[in-house]
Amino acid sequence: MARKVRGFERVLDAPSLFAVAYDEIGSSIYFALGIIAAQALGLTPVVLFVSGLLFLIVSLSYAEGTAALPQAGGAATFTRRAFNDLAGFVTGWVLFLDFLIVIALSTLFLPHYLGAALGTPSLSESPWDVVVAVGVIAAIVGARLVRRSRIHTAALVLAVLDISVQLLVIVIGLAVFFSPDVLTSGFDFAVEQSWDDLFFALPLAMLAYTGLETVANLAAETREPGTVLPRSLFSSIGLVVITTVLIAILAVTAFPSEDGSSGLADDWLQAPIVGIVTAFEGHLPNALVDILRVVVGLSGALILFAAATTAITGCTRLGRSMAEHGMLPREFGRLERRSLVSREALVAVGVVAIAIVVATGALAGDDAAFLASLYSFGVLFAFTAAQLAVIRLRQTEPDLDRPFRAKPEVRIKGVPLPLPALIGAPLTFAVWVLALVTHPGARYAGPAWLACGLVVFFIVRRRLEASVLDDIDPVESLPPSVAYRKVLVPMKLGNVGEEMVATAVALAKERGSSVEAIFVVRVPRAFPLEGPLPEDVRRRAEESLAEARALGEENGVEIVTRTVVARSIGHAIVEDAHENSVDLIVLGSSPRWRRQSRFFSPTVDHILRHAPCEVLVVAFPDGTFDESD
Picture 1 (cartoon, helix red, strand yellow):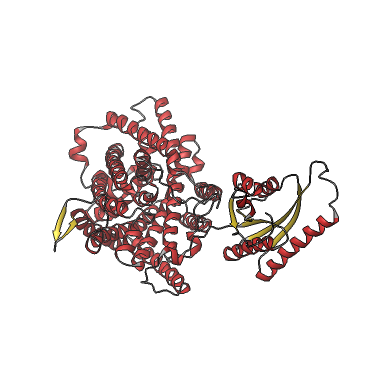
Picture 2: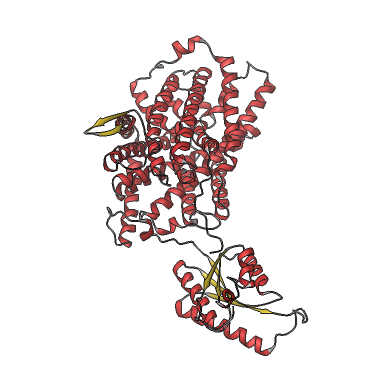
């Protein structure tokens, strides 16, 4: 190949990964705060602090797992390696649900922040918020279909913006609202609030710390993942927990609970950070409050847009990892030149996310809590599975290279096991059970989603004629296969031409592509390009293209043929590839050029240097044909 489809390159250094992690994890406060405050009321900071500590404990296991297995897939990869493919699939499938919910919530809350910034209340009203959310998802998927994402490119800018805006709100809020009474009288049960409400709020609080799986999926793109990933992950999570708790303190201070309800959730459920800014009215000049509202609204919309984008990317990368191991249809595992990840996966993610948005509607009242509880079903299951996998890998693969080890460790039967995982796994499992008991979304919709996934898994394995417990190697289940939509083959009469069109037809038949066969007639500069072709040249072109069409018909492959007149054969092929958006050019190279100390002919060399797509060159050995290139 002249240019291969590059996979996931290791381009993320420590600052870039920190920025990506902070953007992903920190963005959730923009949609989670109001949902959690509606249930936790004055205890919102306490609930967020406790869930933040649990999140930090879980991240130790994720850091060990991703450093030891620096591949896409996150918890699904750890679980598959530690147990079997069925366990890996179940973990990955519930994580799909979490990615989709993050996409839906991010895009549904985005128009509320944008409307607050622009002073356009209609954007915050139904059905326009749903229309905007659908449009945002469609736009992200459309852009990703034609261009691969570079997550790290804008991550640093967004991280600086996010941290700056949150610190600005915190500093002003503490100056305006904070008093010692907050620490003594604020953090308490409200009127008619009980432990049941606290138990109800705790699973929902996991929504405030989304993004760990997205970061884990970047292990394959991280430079020195054994050191860079843990350091960046812990620093970003620590900063997120601190800022989240401080913002929650401001929220319960600015909107104290009354009669068992939260003013923040009642009035600013879908734009809680803007709600905190509006509470500055009467304490700051109105002009300054308006400026802060615009800044927070625009930055919130931008950060939620970025969160939806990275969630879509994380979802498709998880799909590729699972497809490589025979858990999903092989189409989801393709690498493509333009989008890098599979187009089928991108479209599927977009369609399901849009369906969730439309089905949920404008997310008023407890509907948002329903999605949050459904999110807790998936994330708590995955967190538990990931920690159990890290424990089991310590037992089954003690010699596995672990650049980072979760500590402290305790020895059980001579095996050093990570104490954070031993503590964290029972805790996340207990909160998962709590979610099932207290939330209908987790109790009914979660298992229904899982049942649908198992049907998909069984169908895929049946097509592969494999057991659900088989460990399918990526090379066996999914041979390297780039999705070429359109293959271009320059034609000539004789054996070389036959071999080239046969190669193009074989590739097209395997990948469901179409073939475009062209015969380039080179016209010397002494003659005009527009003149009629000599009879022998015209006959040679027709015979060659007819030969290609006949071979295509025999193999059920569509072949479009045309004759091109040009001064240079190489220039004509490159220009044709440009004009027709070709994905692959198939060329043959005869041995006579190698006998002249040139590996390729001038024509092939020019195409290799200038082609806008992949180029496959078949170099025939000496003595195969007597034809020239």
